Amino acid sequence: MTVAAPTAPIATTTTDVSARTGEVDNRAAYVSFGFAYVFGHGTSALSQGADPLVDMPGWLPTVLLGIGLAAGTVHATIAAVRAQRGADASGLRSARLLGLSWVSGFAALFLAITGLTTSLDMPELQTTLWPTGAGLVVGLLYLGEGAARRNVLHYSLGTWLALISTVALFLGTPGLFWVLAVAGGGGYAVAAVLEQRRLVAAGHAHG
Image 1 (cartoon, rainbow, N blue to C red):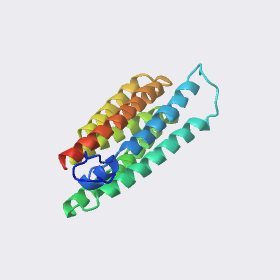
Image 2 (image 1 turned 60 degrees about the horizontal axis):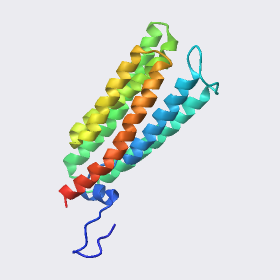
Image 3 (image 1 turned 135 degrees about the horizontal axis):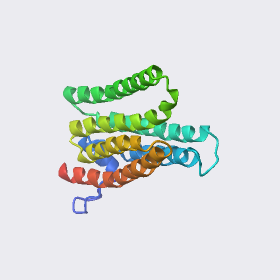
Image 4 (image 1 turned 45 degrees about the horizontal axis):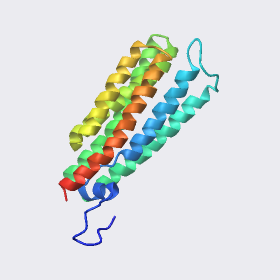
């Protein structure tokens, strides 16, 4: 929003704040990933187990999860690229390394799950290990990003995701999907609300 006169109260949109301060606006990414957790893992929780609550096509949870994850990845990438505008060489290098860490993290997760399930000859474990392992990797990556960007909210969300994803391993299916849907999706929802306040506070600090 453009300020009409110097004497008027300053009312800056969070998009302007992020562009001006170099902050990453994570709200769209948080909402998209939250959708993936609530609807993707939520439908898995409802339709899996010995006595499923709802009978639905086996492909539906995967499709809903994929839509949310794809949208979240796109939004997170766009926000990160916008935040790089005007950054110095050191800042650009840091941002690129953070981006590459996502590739490294999920490549390592793929190898770990594939190797473990193959060596144990238990392919069914992938149903448990992929959702919880992905949550753990994302949480750890958020920890790194939060520390590098001095973003306490992002760091806190990463801590939450890493903890609930590993706790969910104790429950098996469909319990682990309930934890991811409710606690994980809820964590993203809270983070999306608090992100607005963080960006406004950052704008005032740099104003």
